[in-house]
Amino acid sequence: MIEFTWTDTVAESQLWARELRSFAGSAATLGELAVRRADLAARTLPAGVFPAGTTDLDLLDQILVARPPQTPVADLLLEPVGEIEERCARLVFDDPGRVAAWDRQQPVVALGAPVVRNDQVLDTVGFTADCLDVQQQEWAELREGWLPRLADAGWQPCSTAFLTAAMTGFLDVYQRQSAPRMHDVVLVEPLSPHPVVRSALDALRPVRR
Image (cartoon, rainbow, N blue to C red):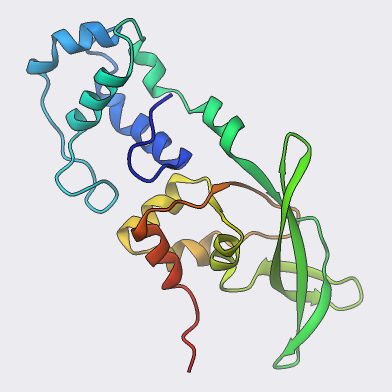
């Protein structure tokens, strides 16, 4: 699909596909689109999500250089299935865990979530969750800080919502609203080296005094 040129993530590739949809009706192939390039109107992309001042034509220009002229424009609008299969994995929350601590008389469960790709366990990430039933050790939702824990293991959600939240400064909201629950499966990809992503994740860590 689309080359990784900024955060080196599949999530960004998905963002590109969304932003390029405005060109869907302009031509059938990239060669035809290149011929009509001068007639296309630029649209500024969301501030913070893409580098400042970036337009959809900037993305298109990179595509025109990187892809053959016979490439169908429709291919740019597809979800990056190849990258997802190659780079992403499933984070599986099936471990009931064990009571490892107490917080204000509330049991806290420690659990491990395997990172699985092609039925092979690549990694296991440790998390904590509030316990609902001490005897059955059932838990409802991961505790705050699950994104930094995931990042410490070298992974991040393969999600355009995650990437957008990190770039716009609302990663704390994303963390609260998207906390996985028991039996959830989360698509993850290798942690982005982009400094803004790393800074957003670091801001979620508790302040040590």
